[in-house]
Image (tube, rainbow, N blue to C red; front, top):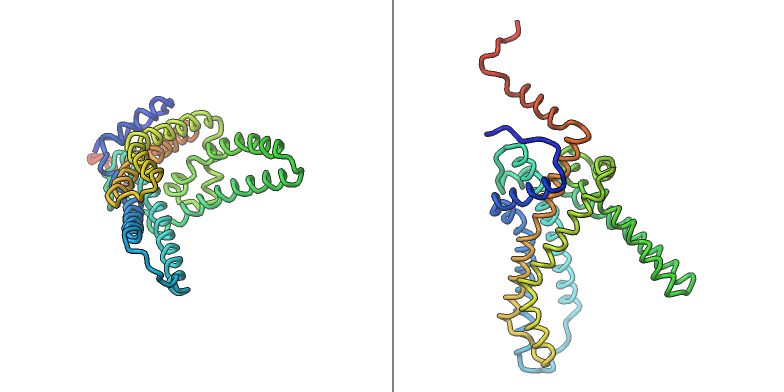
Length: 303
């Protein structure tokens, strides 16, 4: 295995390396990302089948759903949501491990990346929860302020003023997951670590966020928009979209999510290593660690 190419990278180099890793290891990253979205695809196709069958069934005066049936549907939906969140967290963490292995010139595989996740998936969910909680508290404060002053204009102003802190927060928290996975940190400590590493580099991370957002919308426009237009046309004509059209729309959403999903995680994982190289001389640390763990074969042993 060739030595890892560790050096400080510019934003352009980070992005170039991101797309090279993605292109050269497409099936690795697509396979990792596909797991949670495949579960969602199965559920959505099942819902489409039920709705299509109900729309084509003859109208009868059937009794409403029993409380037990409603409770079962709610319980089943909650279970699917929990599994989906766990899979999203596991896929995110596994992608970080795969990028780490490739960046450090180690072999990477779908199975090996998921095996390294284990219980660490709950750290990923904890980070997501804490960031969402902070954003939610800010949203509630703005809404409460708007209702207190009874002024829609002040409420809008509050939302506008909230945008900048939200953007800054997202940029400063961008490498929380790589820190949690690769340094074995808890959620709060990983967020603190991210704030430390990203200091002075928020603008570069903001550019990465913008590029990922643009890639997401391009995938939606290319793969999903034509089918969404057909579904809206059917709805406007007071017709239920056919089961086949609904399945095609869900497949298009699945493909776009799998195609775009890994890009942001790859970029932020590389940015994590880039910041460590710049601020902590990680390249020298890794070189010394490699020399210690792999001594020269002809080196004389210590007396």
